[in-house]
Image (cartoon, rainbow, N blue to C red):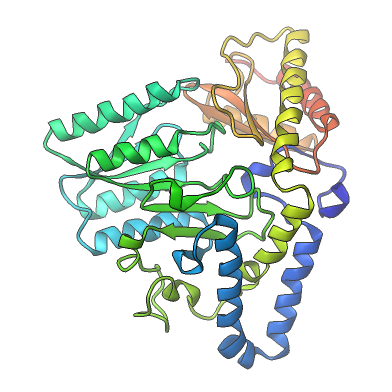
Amino acid sequence: MRDSFSLDPAITHVNHGSYGAVPIVVQEEQQRWRRRAEANPMRFNRIEKPEQVARARAVGAAFLDVEPDAIALVRNVTEAVSTVLCSLAGTGELGRGDVILVNSQGYGAVQRAAQRWCDRTGAGMVTVDVPVGVTDDELVAAHRRVAEEVIGRGGRVRLVVIDHVTSPTGRVLPVTELTRLAREFGALSFVDAAHVPGQLLARPAGSGADYWTGTWHKWGYAPRGTTVLWVAPARRESCLPLTTSWAHGEPFPGPFDMRGTDDYSAWLSLPAALDFWESAGGPVIAQRATTLLDDAAVLVTKAFAEAGYAVTSPSGGSHPAPQLRLLALPDGVAATGDAADELYERLSAASVEAQVLWHAGRGWLRLSAAPYNDLEDYARLAEALVAEIGSMPVT
C-alpha cells in the first residue's frame, strides 16, 4: 500500500489526519483533468467544466446518501464555516444579542471565523468547556448549562458549532444529541465533520444539523481543496458562496459550482479518490486502523515507561475516532505551545512527522493511522520521542 502514495520512504509519516496524502492514481487523474483543460481552455471552461463539476458533486452526494442538489463543493471546512457565517450575517440572523456556542476542543480556524463574524455583527461567542475524557452525558449537560446561562442573561443562542470529530483530540462527539439540544433552544447547528468522510459513516441528512461540512482530502484521499457543504432544505436559499460569479441567482448549489476562472481539477478527481477508498478496503480501512492504533498506543506508552518518564494524565480519552488516537506526553513535555512546536521540529528533523500539540495545559500526541502505516512506523516514532525528549528541557 505504501507504493500507492508518493510519500518519502525516508520519513515516518504518522499524521495523515492533518493534511492527508493523495494516492498516485488520484494525482494522475488530477493531472489528466489539467491536461484536458489545457488542450482546449475555451471549450473546457465554457462547456465541459460545468457538466463535470455537477458529475463529481453527484458522486460525492451518493457517497453521503443525499441528493446531488443537497450539497455544494467548497475548498475546505474553513471556507464552509465562513460561508455559513457570512450568509447568517447577510440575512440579519446574526447580530447583537445573538450567541454562537463553540467548544474547547473545537478547530481553531473555525473558532477564529466565528469570532470574526461576531466582531463584525455585534454577536458574541461563548466556549463550552469540554475536558479530555468527559462522558457524552456530561458533554451534553455542559452545553445545556451554558445555553441556559446565555438565555438567563437575555441572549439568544443563534448557532451551535458541533465537532463530529474534534481536531486536537480525535474524539467523536454525540452529534445527534447536540443538534437536538440546539433545536430545543431554537438555535441552528453547524456540524464540523472535517474528519468524517471515509473514516466514519457520513450521513449529514440524518445528523439533525442545519449545516454539515466534511473534507475528502483526509480520509477520502482526494486532492486538497475538495470539501462538501451540505445544507438543510430550509436553509439553502439563503446560503450563498463567498464569491459572486456568473451563476449568482441560480438555485442552490448552482452558485457554488462556478466561483470564477480557477483550477477545478481537485473537485473533478473526487470520483477517482472515492474509487481508491473503496479499492483499499472502504470501511475496513478504519477497522484496521483502530487495531493498529491500539497496538501503537501500547508501544509508545511502554517506551515512555521504560525511559522513566512519568505520564500522570490518562491517554486516549473517550470515544476516539477509528483512525486517530490521543496520547498524553510525559509530564512537563510540550507544556506550552512553543514547547510543542519545538518538539515537533525536533521530530521532523529526525525524519518523523507527527502531530504534537499543547491542549488543556499539557502536551499531547495525536496519532493517525492510514493504509500505508504499520507498527514499525510507531516504533520509530517512540524511539525518536524518547531520544528528543531526553535532550529537551522539561518544565
